[in-house]
Every structure is written in structure tokens, then in C-alpha cells.
Length: 92
Image 1 (cartoon, rainbow, N blue to C red):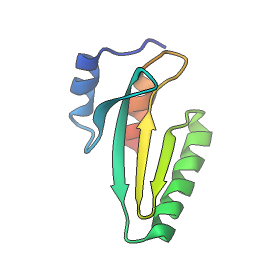
Image 2 (cartoon, one colour):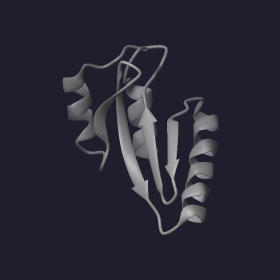
Image 3 (cartoon, one colour):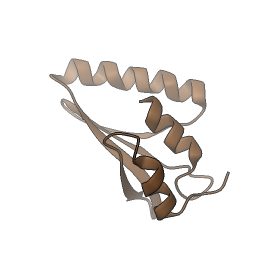
Image 4 (cartoon, one colour):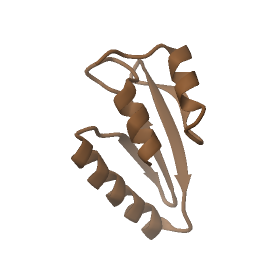
């Protein structure tokens, strides 16, 4: 799977709400912060993300800060963002 250019990523992100181009471990990535009423709701969301990620065989980096969850998607094998990342972002 080929990594996308920053321009391709920006174009592909337009219909996917609230995801942004970023960088993770020296590679392009996309990320989004989700906010919840409390920690319990945040963890419930993380558990749903984990189930979806296992099913897809594609796992985001997950950062939990009480009621906020930041997801970072990048295809490590490709060294950047691929269509797999965009598909996962759209599903979340």
C-alpha cells in the first residue's frame, strides 16, 4: 500500500469531519481529538475503537487524557498515511 502525499491527504480529509494532517514518529499521520462528558465515556469509546481496529487489522495510536481521546492514524509499514488510515478515520 502506497503512502499518500500531504496534498492527497488534505483533499481526502475534506469530507471526513475534524481529522487533521499531522506527524507521528517522523511520518505523516492524521489525528483527531474526541471529547466526552467523563472518563467512563472516553474509555467506552476507546473500547469500541479497539474492537473496530482489531476487525480491520489496523490500529491507531490512542492517547487518553481523562475525558479526551486523541487518535493518531498512520500506516507504519508504508511510512505515512494510506487509504487504510482514511477508511478507519471515516468509520470513526
